[in-house]
Amino acid sequence: MVPALETHDLTVSYHKRPVLYGVDVEIPQGSLVGIVGPNGAGKSTLIKSIMGVVPSAGGWVKVFGKPLKENLHRVGYVPQRESVDWDFPVTVMDVALMGTYGKLGLFGRPGKKERLRASEALDKVGMLPYSNRQIGNLSGGQQQRVFLARALAQDSDLYLMDEPFVGVDAATEAAIVTLLQEMRKSGKTVLVVHHDLQSASEYFDRLILLNMRLVAYGKVEDVYNNELLQKTYGGRLTILSEVADQAAKM
Amino acid sequence: MMETLIEYITRPWDILGWGALWLILMAFLVALPCGQVGSFLILRRMALTGDAISHSVFPGVVIAFMFTGDLGSPWLIVGAGLAGLASTVIIELIHKWTRVKQDAATGISFTALFALGVVLMEVMLGQNVDLDLECVLHGRLGLLLEADTMDLLGLLVPSPVVVMAGVSACTLLLVTVFYRVLMLSSFDAGLAASYGYKPALIHYGLMFTVSFIVVAAFQAVGAILVIALLILPGASAYLCTHRLKIMLVLAAVHALLSAIGGMYLHVWFDSNMSASVVVSGGVLFVLAWLLGPVDGVLWRWMKDDLVEDPN
Image (tube, rainbow over all chains, first blue to last red; front, top):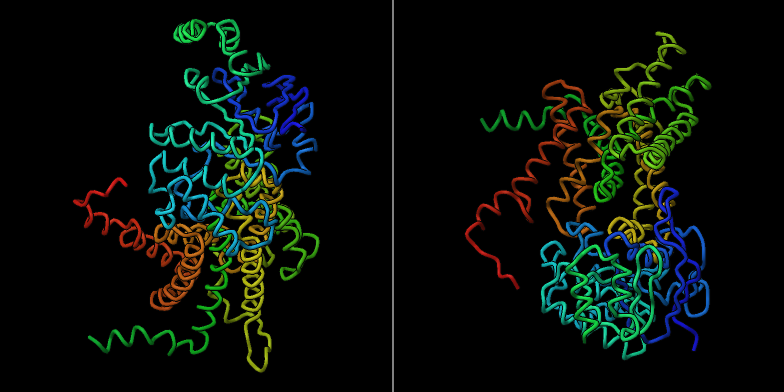
């Protein structure tokens, strides 16, 4: 089976200073992958450059064996919740419908089919009763659920999610994890930028350890160890090394 | 008492006759397209960029005027449109290549270009030209009734009204056709880019449209007051609704009400018509702020003791 995502020597620079060098990963279909690393490690940059939202300075990306452009409709992107203005005059339903825009092209208008897909997606994350609410009147967890509903409405095969667990309540976090696992079961491939090292080993089956370079990539049991985590976080934070120690003992 | 009130209301129509209607229509047709693109500028947090464009079209007009010597020439619109785009490009260049941030870059770009226009006008054109600073700043909407007229199906329509009607129609068409593109790219540029929308193209397309509208509105309301027409309708509408479509409709309503209010102020106080339109637009904004149905101060104050159900 052709890998869901392949990057080769992916390099990104801001103002001529490289922030991500030579990342090579090959992600098989149906895997749930966490991207972890310290602040400024380039986690968000990695998925943004895969999506082409941030231009890459070198290397290439293939999605289901083809350049991204040819398979754009098979990829769903979930930006950070903080990246949008939640005072924007749109309702929960409007946001979910945005998930269907990709397949509509520039001028198509969402019809019955799209509305149904958006409603189903909202129902899956428990946000259907809030369809007509303005998005500013939602809690952080609810906002994140709306973003996930929008991703589900995209009906993609590969998802790239930027910090979906930031600022959400415990119930939403659990709901998101269940949803991610359901998605994997139905054959979707999901990459998630994640900030919490401790839960990373429970939530995902593969990990990308990133610190401007790819430190390690593989199955959780192969890469979640003291040595590699130290290497990723540079041993700067003692609390992290404790976590790593615990992990090593497990 | 009642009679005086009625006298006030009918006075413009007694004095100007059809002219009152033309003034309202013209002010509305200027404010309408400004309010539509302005709504998107507000949502994209680019209100200051609208400001920048409205100022920087001035040197474009002056330069084009130097070559053509005719204030009615279509080259003025081209020159102004290019100058407007140039200012946004300059903002981007400063922002990208220096450590100066976007807001400061905007401030530099439009003031410098506007000043360049003033200097060019005085140096190159001398004093005895038909392009006076007063008009550039405040417009001459009030002189509409002295403008040339065009015969449309037997009706004599002032030609600026015809021009602005065309501009309004183009703007409404563009906003309708690109509605979803504008909405998505304004709300979530990242997702829009992931769909293959070109953010730079949308940005410059919007900027060019703003330049075009500003130039068309320029002669009517001047460079300063046009900023108000770009921002006031959208900002007032924004306070009254949580739906983008309704916001655009309300911005149009705001434009119409400002035009009507402006015409009355103009006649009652013999004030500058363009400024009067902006003053009534400002009053409407305050009303929206106080009485807006969504989060107007009044309703919030009345609902103060009700605690919203967290679910």
